Image 1 (cartoon, each protein chain N blue to C red):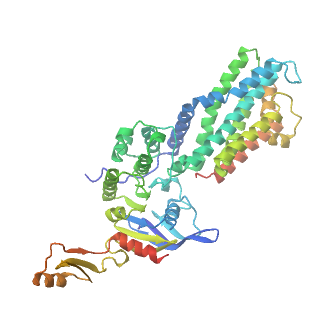
Image 2 (image 1 turned 60 degrees about the horizontal axis):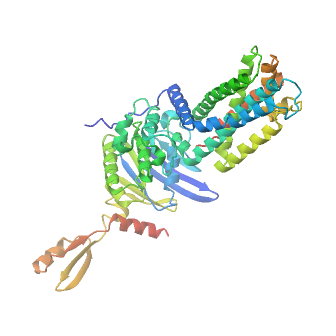
Image 3 (image 1 turned 180 degrees about the vertical axis):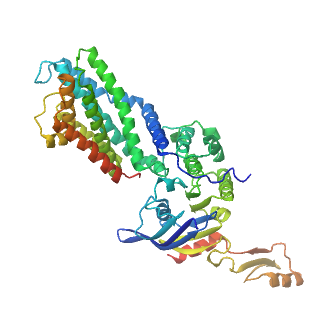
Length: 278
Length: 252
């Protein structure tokens, strides 16, 4: 059984489609990333999958159940890191994590989770005194403390500093390595590239491309750009396989100290996909 | 190494979840202890002012006997309705509730925990006010204490239900305004400092503060039974609003 199966999912607000009939399958144990600009429908989609929002049409199965009807036993199997929980609670990090941990039968200990998200030094600080990035890390801690089978992360690293982001990536890889299915939305292409087994790009409420980071949007089959200096002039050629070109250059005795071969980055591919929608 | 992070999902027993949420609500209440004390300010002023001095016309010479039950009823409303609505409204807008909605805590579970926490708060406030009342000369009837407690629990549950419903439907600023307005209107016409007009069951339903105050007067002042119309009206409050809140409450 797949972790998530979505067919024809549609969400309409006042006659406008926020999500315009998408299909999606996420396998168990997979890290799946949803990319897309603001307003593409990512968060709406994720909130429907979490059971926080009703859908207008379509069929949705998350861990085998319809999230619109599933009860708290189902809810206990998923972990959620919300996009915008701006918690001004008068609780310390430790109190909040321990509190939510108590809702689960076999939780991680709160100290373990606080260390995992790198908030050990802020254990006894009130949540409202934390920076935005630190609060996001509290959200992450709350999302994983119950050892969920399926973890939703909605733009989890917004406001993280680079080091915290790398540590977070390691954490996500560890969770996935031990069998947690992860669905992540993000603005950061490097994040999707570093983490995702598969990803989909959303724009205007629809999925415009789906694949692995290496193959998304025909990226793997894209032309390689070969650039070198030829007696003081810059030369560039686009070829699908640069082998022959380079053999020829070597044979001709060209200066290859400045040779570069590039393929479209995930960002190039992404911007093309998004651009085509506008 | 594998296994340390392995999923082990599940839900703790609902009793455990509820117990923990009630404890958390109480902890948060204690953290805003100054608000709990301040909430007793108006009732205290009313009790000492109207109870000890002839500032209003009362249908009795036993001013404290008349005023203290009304003040207790006012405190219940202030905490279970006004305080509850405002706090919950802001919690919702800050995203605290949405976060809880992502956990295995159910909607009725949250409403129950919030109502239980408010009841605990009311126990403390009523005890303090009653002690002050006794200190300045209030001499209640002790014989009808159980029905007095019964109507108080019903009133608190009803207030809390309406508060949670308002807080989940309106914006926090609107909730604050509406809750304050309803408090002031009830305080003015609710028969706390002077006698309310005689009301039928429907009237008691519209003026729960007056109904509660009247019931407390019947029991604590005269040792009488609570009129059936008041039982009916407050029971309706305790069923209708919590039920509507459990159906319509929104986490975000």
